[in-house]
Image (tube, rainbow, N blue to C red; front, side, top):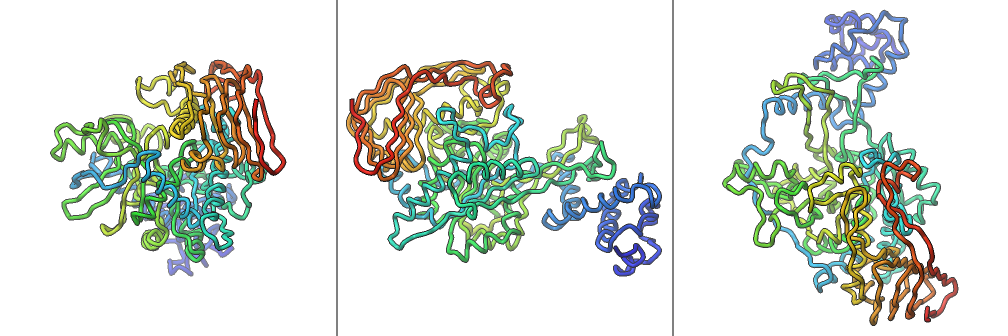
Length: 624
């Protein structure tokens, strides 16, 4: 390692460390620093971070810890677009704006943006699904999965949670099987011996990286080729102790800067620096689809939304659901600035109402004649056109518009209750786009496309009546509801649900119907496999694993599990009745049950079922 004098000389800094005169403890330790560390130290002093070194003892004491401190500073510097200097300067500006109560939407007027509203199952929907499936072989998928399930009352990574407990398949398995089903169906639509493998990127964090790798490896990547999957790990950012953006030291280690997650907006800079985007472009890919970790219904919406992007030529397509006025979900809004700038962006629900009132809408965020707000609800799933995305990132290097949310001790806003940090969100990408960018949205029914799992049982039980719980309970029940309604639309007779309460949440309990993505990737493929008067009673469970399973007069009252190889064509024509599986209530405080069961408030008691396995090619029939 170069001496401090050598390092200083190399930087044209006077060899006596005069620049560090204001901080004697640092000046005494300069000989420990490498040339790039001297430069970082100088920047930190210039930016008012003298407190980081004031406790440093004489050289020879804690030298390894001092070097460790600069290792961390170097990492924080390299992982943020523009380095630590940019981070501190951005923080000073945002903290000053926050203290002054500055409105980020000053000068902007909101209006309703243009987009597509789809009706499930109609001719337009079916043709858009077909267009989207055809386009899927030109897409890449990006899952942001940097968070643990602590807010849910679950200690593991969220993608390892069962999506539903009838099959027990976790979210990650469902996502991978859905991408593989899209890959296969897309290739079948082109007759050129298509061998396309759809790339799948997972953004992880220090909290989730090792556990995500373990989940993939211990399950053979759920059938995906390991070379298709790429993990990108996001780093944390420095915490801020006060309004002057002084970096916070870790309370348990004065040689460490306290850090916290920066938010899922980091996915853009990680993709930019990874080189993957250019690689995808060279392979002829056109689309990048971003999604979050625990929406079990998402892939019901992907084919048609991708079809919208392809047919409308959207550079940015935000997936959305109908939104009630003042509902706690961001609204997709067109903003026009007095200087002529425009953007189509997610505006958080608590900012949308005051913004509308301040710009000539006395009723604020109000429902229109449809019974919903004209500003659709953003569900944080984005489809970006790859070419324009790369061009934009060349300008920004993936840096996303940030915000800061300090919790002040009192109304003077002079001190924080605890350290804060800058944050960024994936869906704020359009904020920097030129007015020429084609930014739109696709609205789909909530029952079809959106049932996130993010609230623990206690928080969910406090949700006002009529508002969504967004819990493990509601997330699982929403899957059964969606599958039941899809089969109904395809012509099957599916019994009405009963209402029950689990963990203090009143939900509809539909028949527990679930299928592998290859069976029902889109509505057309479901409709082709549901014939005659098939019926399923409310207490039933139906599991379909196999591509060519047809419901032709099935009458189910109990539990039926069908497993079939691709070469087996199976017709379900008979009456099946058994004692089935019973839903048992579980109290979330009951520590004798597993966490993933407790947070749902129920478990399935598997009393009796019919399970049939078709392992031979040919035509088969399950008849009485």
